[in-house]
Every structure is written in C-alpha cells, then in structure tokens.
Image 1 (cartoon, one colour):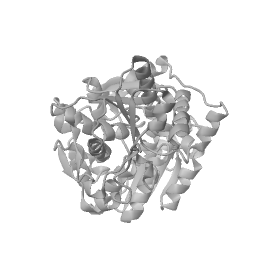
Image 2: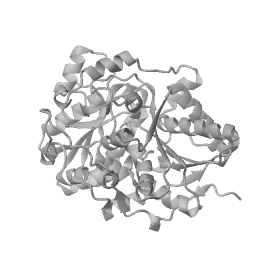
Image 3: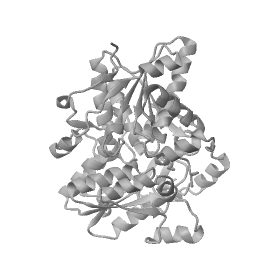
Length: 452
C-alpha cells in the first residue's frame, strides 16, 4: 500500500521553537512610538507581560518550549502530514502534493499553538485576565480554551461580520468560558467613535485590536494577547514547520514549494520559516509562497512603511507591508485574512525577496477547497483554501510542463464551522472582491507621517 499518513511519534515532537530573526542578514526594524522614535521594549509592558516581550525582541535562534506547554501540545501534536494521492490523481499532475493538517487541534486550527504558550507565560507573570480580537473565531476559540486551561479570564472582541457569519465559533468560545463581544462595541472609546461615524460598521481586525488593546491598557489585572503578526506569535507557530521537516525526512523527500495562507502571518511563518533555516544554513532553498486574498492584498499591493497594527493607533508602529491602518476590508468569508497589514518579519523577508506572495480571488479559493474536499475528504477552513488554490495552480502548471515537483501546503484548520460560507458558494452567492487601487492609494495617504 502507498503511504498516506506520515505520523511523527510524540517523542519526536520539537522541544524548541525556531526564531527566524537569527538568520536574517539585516536585523528586524525596531517598533516606533506615536512620536516616530524608536520605542523601548519596556514601553510595551502596558499591554504585554514581560516574559512575552522578551520573546518578541529576542534574536536567539532556538527558544525552549516550556514543559507545561509541551504536555498540553501532546493532546494533539505532532499533527499528521498527508500525501495527497487522491488529489494528485484527480489533477492528473506529476507533482507530489503533501499537506500538514492542523485542524485536529481541539480548537480546529493552528491557532492553539500560540494560545497555549501565551496563556502560560501570562499565568507565570501573575496575569488573571486577557483581552484579544478574533476574525473568523479560530484565535478567539483557541485563547478561550487556553485561558480555561490556565485559569485566566478571556474577553474576545470578534469582528462583527464574522460574529454574524459564524455563530458556532462564538458558541465554542463561550463553551470554553470566553466572553464574546461583536466589534465595534459601545464599551470602548474606540468602538463608540467608530459607531458614531457608521452605526452599521461591520468591523475589522484592526478595529477589534484597537478595542482589546484599549481595554488592556486601562486595567492593571489585564494584558492583551494577539493571534498573529507579532514575532513571538510566529515563533510559537514554527512547531508546524519543524515537525514537517522531520516528517519529510521520514519519507526521504523535501518540498520544492511551500504554500500557506497569509493574513497577519502566523500561518505562513509557522510552516515556512523552519524551511528558510535550511536555506540560511546553505541547504536546499525551497520557494516559500504566502497566499493572500485579492480583497486584502497587503503584500502584493501594499506599501512597505511604518504603520500601526490597529485602526485607532493604540499599538506601536512596525515596519510592514500595509494597506493603511484604517483600511476597511470587504466582508469576505476568510475572516482570518481580513487584515490591513502583515507581520514585520514576513514583510521584511518579502521586501528582501526571500519569499514570494500571490493574491487569489474568493470564488477560486472555494473552487479549490471543494475540489480538495471531494478528493481528500477534509473540508478546509476558508483561509486554508487560499493555500490549496495556489498549490493546485502550481500542480496544474506541472501537468503542462511535466515537472515532478514536490509541493507542500499548510491545511491550517477545518471548515466545519464555516458551512454557511460553503452554502453561499454552492448556491453561487459568493462574489469576488478585487479591492480598488484608488481606495488603497487613499488609505496609504493616511499613513502616520511621523514614521515616513
């Protein structure tokens, strides 16, 4: 029989995370304060625990995973890697296709990989309460569960359009003890200001971040937790790629191209960065492809500049590819990708041409997700469909050229709570959103002038 599942024993689960900052030729650009001056890391202590800040600014290549975190990871890690034999056959491609399946986590996605350590480090720092944002609900679900495991209360500001589209993700958070609010709310100054301007505002990740940060900064017992973008979040996610490298070694193969969805960057960084380490050490250089929606094309159409991570400017400014912090994305169904910017590490690597990026339209991603589900059986999250789309496109190019490439993508979560989106696709009610360049240009004009 052909091998389909590549299963890594628990004893082989990585004991350290990989920090890509150690292998970049140029050091990561420092964050800036509202005055445009370099921010001292201690200034972030208003919203982050000190042990989290240490990881955020670290340039150490390997960082130990605490034993308490590894013990919880073992409930679902290592995650399986699959050879997509049936998809290869359906496509008629000579390419080999592999995927890592993060949907087996209790929360159904890769987000728990960072939620667990963030809750752990906050618990060690004596924090009893966390605020956060969520788009599709996968991060909010993950942090709600992590908070429950470590005895920390969690309040989640959920982007209103996703709050309405994905009621069962809301139920998951509440089941695990999380308090869920549709953002923008009338509980924060940020929310009240935005609702006064537009009472029907459908929300965005930038707005939800502003609300969560505002609340965390105003309470002594509360810190903020972010599900993507920041260096420490991408660090935690590298366990995906580190496991995958071991799994490829088990079958004597290695990827030529790696695809992952990219909104804030944790998904992409988690699977791609460990393979970049091979190239940095003089080994094989796989092509690393970040896949974003055409409606939120921060890498492919954004501007490389310092910008805030949230709508209202409560966060430090980081050097990133951005569409402007007040960019208002359309209400696409891949809620986790509805973000105006990208991780500073991912942005730097894209700017230095160490990675690639491509934008794909919404309907085409669901085409790919359904094709994958009919071949492999797993219904993917809408975010994951972006990576599947780009991988299938490359597999079809291999069919035309006869190339026998090894392709690998991160199946970052299942779509069991996204069936309303699939219903709309199957009923031909989904639309493509190609964000107008004029709107992007207008948002870029409003970038912080102090940082230019």
